Amino acid sequence: MSSRRVTIATTQYEVGFDREANLLAILQRIDEAADHGADLVLFPEFTNHATWYRDQDHCWEVAVDEDGPWVGAIRERAKARRIWVAFNAATRGPRPTVYDQNYLINRQGELVGTVRKKVLIGSENDFMTKDDVEPEVFDTELGRIGFTTCMDGVLPETARTVAVKGAQIILDSLNSHARDEGALHVPVRAAENGVFLVSSCKSGPLIPWEAAGELIARRGIKPHLINTPGESQIVSPRGEVIAKGGFLTDEIVYATIDPSEADEKRLPGLGDLLADRRPEVYGLLAVPNDHLPLVTRPSSVEVAPFLAAALQTVCDPANVEMTVLRGLDLIEEAADRGAKLIVLPELFPFADGAVPANPTGAARRSREVEEAIGEIAAERNVFVVASLVEEAAGRFFHTTTLWSPEGAMARYRQMHLREPDRRWATAGEGPVAVDTALGRIGLLAGYDGIFPEAARLLALLGADLIAYSTCWRVAWEPKLGIRERAAENHLSIVAASRADAPVARGSVIVTAPRFPTPWRGRLNPVDVAEASPELETFVLQTVDPTASRNKVMLPQTDAIFNRRAELHGPLVDPARAARSAPVLESP
Image (tube, rainbow, N blue to C red):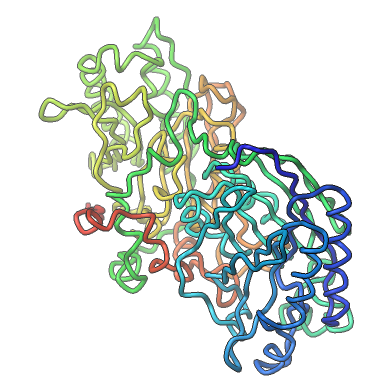
């Protein structure tokens, strides 16, 4: 394990069609990074040639050989300058096979290893061959290093797999003209996995301007939107950007880090980012796409867009009765404003510490609140979601219940329990999604939102939207996490947080647009509505459940069907995966 400080350099610049000029650009930047004292320098995706090819044979011709002179020149320069180099290049296999391949070269100029891209995007599928090898982590003098490559990091599984396998640093080479990669996908992968994330993205036109006309015409893109933005960055295990390149600038960005900081996965007062995972209930992650409930039992109810409300309440520990009454008032007010789905925050009647102090009393109070909520749902003809305390067979559960106008129709017991809740609650044994008149609704609660697996399971169950009763306790979750859960799964999330939450952010509704949408410089855009924090109020937003059923982000690029379930065995427990039973309930 590394305990020394390491200086990382990440580059951003334009790559053209001239392979030798592109090689010279790499060698010059290796020199510059070495002169700056960097231990490792990272380069963007496809450094050998801009990604525009006449045909498959042309792609193979401009690709490089792993043991050829082009790669050899980089190895020699790494050796001469005593610096680690990580770069990406289209690499030849047997003709006409081409791989999108990352290289890791040490100070001695030795090829430590290569990693090929797992998830191809768009026209890459026409020219490249995707990898069939489980993501690898390299134990080096600098720390434990793993890779994602552009689209690999847009979906959650690859970064999660290398984190579970012990990576301290993830290197992410990008060839992207989507600004949400740098704004969202890169920092959230660092935060949710507790790793350093280093990205390198090209800066300038995706392909040289002399060839850009065909791309602009073919995809109907405005000329300024074919620019790769740069914005390369180095992000801490807490999701904080340590260093970041400018927009459309040619530069090298530096930061000095201690990789061993990534070994600390604990969230104070909550638990551990990796140790608290529940691989025994994640079995659906390993199921082939054609056997998913999303495919075999798709949500088919036609649903018009409707208003959803995410409430936020304040708990007065000295007057629980008034807290409950105000929560019920907000349900009625949201219904009066036209909301059809209304979500309450996590354990809204109870102050912090009240439930573990008296779970029996909390369960009794919860039954009273449930009865009142059920009456309002019936009277106002609305669906309501609330997180309360359930007692069953001598055990207690943190349970989220969905009421329809006809009564309680689904119950979900929280799968991931934070440390304080383990004193009184028993963890649930799987995700729950239920078909309703508003579409298929998945349920989450509290600590679940920290774990990308939880929302992913609901997407694989075919949920059109997720109702999430929570309390913001980690700063990156409302800023990055909840947005990423909607984006990476292409669905809507109605997240209700308490106004007295430790993190002062409001309740949030995140919606995914219907495909296709015009290219606006974002790969998988989501729209966000957030309530003002620290107020007893709610946020209203129109939700279109059927927009979530098409998971396509770009042509040949799908949020679900491009995932590589066969490569992410470390995310599940093989001995127990067969016994995990995700619940797809029927009303």
